[in-house]
Image (cartoon, rainbow, N blue to C red; front, side):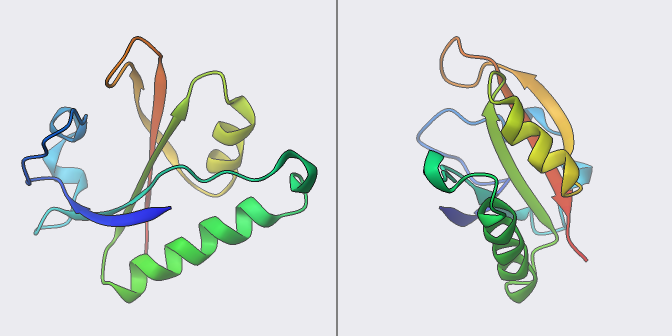
Length: 110
């Protein structure tokens, strides 16, 4: 569901980290990346997504990481809305590794 990554690391797969301004990352380039957060449709709109996001933000604090990054397909407006409600800001919109448009969002953690 999440991992600690580094903006400055070379990855064997296509990422968009090099397209994001280096200044948004902490000095050592580390950030927490949320990927594949999914809630079963029968359990959506019960606050579980919010709880999971907040748990991961606490993990970022525990690991002394001040930035959380996530992305979702542009068609997942409910996911984009959840992220915006939780204080995430859109930083990029476009394809990453295929033709599907994805929205990249970040949140600074205090």
